[in-house]
Amino acid sequence: MIVARQKRKENISEYLLYMWQVEDLIRANNFDIESINRTVVAHYDQSEEVKKEISRWYEELIDMMRSEGVMEKGHIQLNKNVIISLTDLHLRLLKSPKEMVYGAAYYKTLPYIVQLRAKSGGEDLPEIETCFSAVYGYLILRMQGKEVSSETLEGIKQISSFLALLAEKYREDMSGDIEL
Image (tube, rainbow, N blue to C red; front, side, top):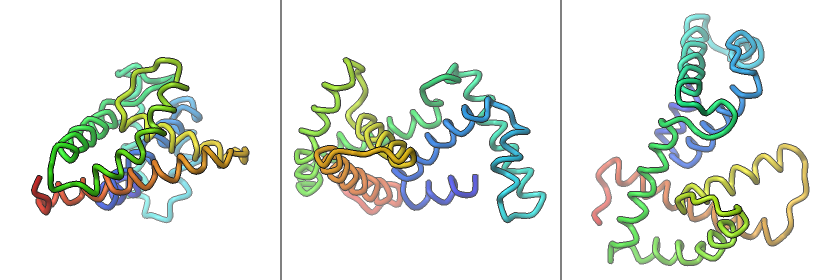
């Protein structure tokens, strides 16, 4: 909750990846709030009141995941809404003649997106979600200590750079500092 709140303000891309990790953390703890309290919440260096608030936040996420049917895989609507907002901004940026740098970054990333979509077995995700899925998958592989090919690493670097630019444009858009 504390980390999510901070990341949402600072970097929407990091926020979304963090929230996907939280969803997986909840799954790994079998939707058991007591297990989450022991393995996660207890380790926060916060007052008991703040820890209770964090625990409530996890409980709310558990309830959302159950009610939205994403217990085994998928993402809660809260996170899907971030993808929708980023996709909307992405399309507006591509249409804007003032955003040539963004367009160039996108077209440099596009071959990697096409390649990922071809490998996904026909799963029809929005391009922006495809990018996030690639970065998240890479992070999971790194946590597992698995090797990643140099070609994959090159693609992840480009996709990450593109998502960082999109996150910056999102922050500008939210603060009213961008004119498309």
